[in-house]
Amino acid sequence: MVVSVKRTTECGGHLGTRRMGKTQLGLHFARQHHQRYSAVVWLNASSEVTLKVAYVSLAQRIRRYNKQSESGQGEVIEQLKEEQAIQLARQWLSQAENKTWLLMFDNYDHPRLPGIRSSTGYDIRTFCPYSAQGSILITTRSSRITFAKLVRLNKFDDLNLSLAVLTRRSGRQTQEDVNAKKLAERFDGLPLALATAGDYISQTADSFGDYLQMYEQSWTDLAENSDNLMEYDDRTLLKEAEAMYMRALKGYEKAWGAEYTSTLSTVNNLGLLYSAQGKMAEAEAMYMRALKGKEKAWGAEHTSTLDTVNHLAVLYKNQGKMAEAEAMYMRALEGFKKI
Image 1: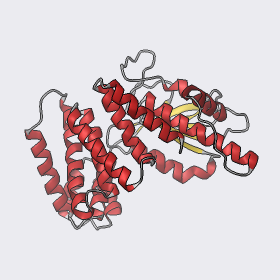
Image 2: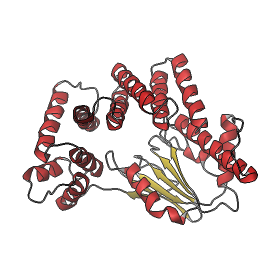
Image 3: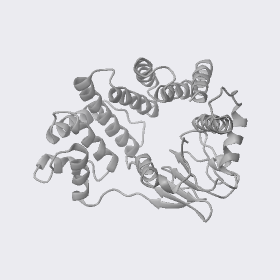
Image 4: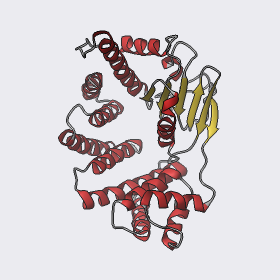
């Protein structure tokens, strides 16, 4: 779900399931309409920790901008404590002369609101600006958010729309390709799955038939070796997601090597997926591989590197490894403060 909030008048939102491309839709909206806003701010709201880290980074940028405006040059500024940073950012968003910003809370999937219990969720309203101004966009899978107007995102119900996505993202013709139609039907109108397939095919020599064959084989292998601990729908979705990532990973490694940016992003996504499945050892292995690759490719303080550091922190926390979790959280926090 994407939740859109125009706070001067009303709260609003969009609801969608996994693989609907909620984040991509929100970012596309921001790119298309950025001229309407004085500032566009994207915040990772997948957990309370990631949102706090994002707010700290925002506060540091605000202070750096203010210092530059006052002195005409950049200055080293002291680091803020977490609560001070959050307060500063919320105050900045609430200033009377600052009313035309767009704030995007991304992946708020685990709300903890009145009537909604959650051991891992939180109330995002405590992070909203103090004044009812500006525009807020929230992406979420939860349909139980009542403080916003929800707009549901649906799958494509027209096969031609699915084929259009494959055509645009792959750069290949699909109308006369039987396998392209089979692939579109297999993904059942899910925009993100279609876009991912198209992007992969555009960067390899594989045909739609090749992609479909290897996807089906990966899915079959996973189905034969999976357990029965999860609900059917969730298990099926995770199997399909893992099949897609493994398929993409093999292709990226073959085409560009183990340290290519798309390869590392896929490795990181596999870590997230394994974590969601409770496969902690596999998740840690993927995160560590992604971290080492990103450190080598981009450096220790690149935002993508720090995202993986934060994922490791969450993983260690869920395993009860508090010392390791704290070390990773502190590294991520210090890194984001410098951005």
